[in-house]
Length: 452
Ligand code: PLZ
Image 1 (cartoon, rainbow, N blue to C red):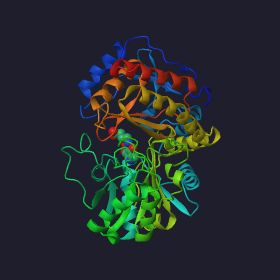
Image 2 (image 1 turned 30 degrees about the vertical axis):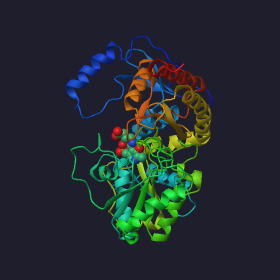
Image 3 (image 1 turned 120 degrees about the vertical axis):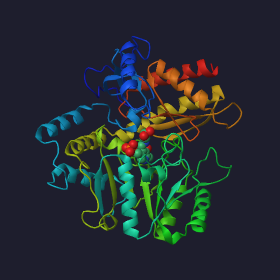
């Protein structure tokens, strides 16, 4: 990890609180937000941002917070990363939009070329670009159905794939994502995930896969499955890392059954887990892969990348959208990918893991309320439980998160049971900031869980 300045020069890489959090300016803006913004739009931390860079977010009251969220795994290269800013400014000044389907431009093509290079597998690939993760997942399903001539999509417990109608159906958790929003799309079948902390002891990855696939064969029929859609490490579900051998067994079954293995790497992708993509850890090569979030340094961009013959199965004009692959977002993506390569941000993610895991395991030993410490690279989580049990403790999780927020550290929660604290620092975060954030976390546990 380096401590180089990786954002706007005006953002000093420090935690510094000058008011309570949220401060008076943020509270004023919160009042306006409450009056003008639909209350269905969620809110983690009512601190309004003025600028951000590297591993720091500066609020409108002048407080500097350490960022362990990256805007939900987006600004992996740092907020307002200099090279991204430069590329975006140049593109905005040249042209902002033509619609790639009307009059194309090079940036879109260059992003697809990069996706062919960085995604797993050395087969011929093609890509299509979209605006959001959910839209990419929707299109992956469209492509899988069209290419196979089959309809069923298999998804997993604890999965998160988005908030549109089809992706709500693919998502597991009811509250807050699905409650009252049905009816949902059909031909979606959910099977058990490999969740080592909560599975029965001794359930290996291959056995967990066999458990899931036996259900698919009995209840769906292998010949009806267009695709098995899976996050190689679950994101919103609580950074659930399947047991070793689970993903390869699912991928093998897909190959044997003529179903597509579709990896949703929207949260895990682009160096987050210490490789370009999380599937690489077990040498799994997806037929289709969805990406978004970290791809473009904070600009909205998403993609489906896959085997050329599958991507080309769809008739001309069958895929698209007004803004998909917007030129400004493409310029940002090219700058982001270049930054990741040149600064070895996959290596930076592995260094973050090396710093975090021992600290969190020590905290687990001391407190007795952390059931599991897990994750890979800069995608690390702890699952909070009642002492001596594996009963989820969402209430304590919320209190710890709020205590961190009050001390100027942005942390996020996750998990089907709401009892997971997850850490997604920008990959460029300085070691000193990361260590300080872990000190704040230790203190939050001392305060809220009585740990020394
Ligand atoms: N697939 C694996 O993690 C987005 C959701 C935040 P969009 N996760 C953050 C929220 O509460 O809405 C996500 C993901 C995986 C798909 C998506 C959807 O990506 O860009 O939010 O549509």
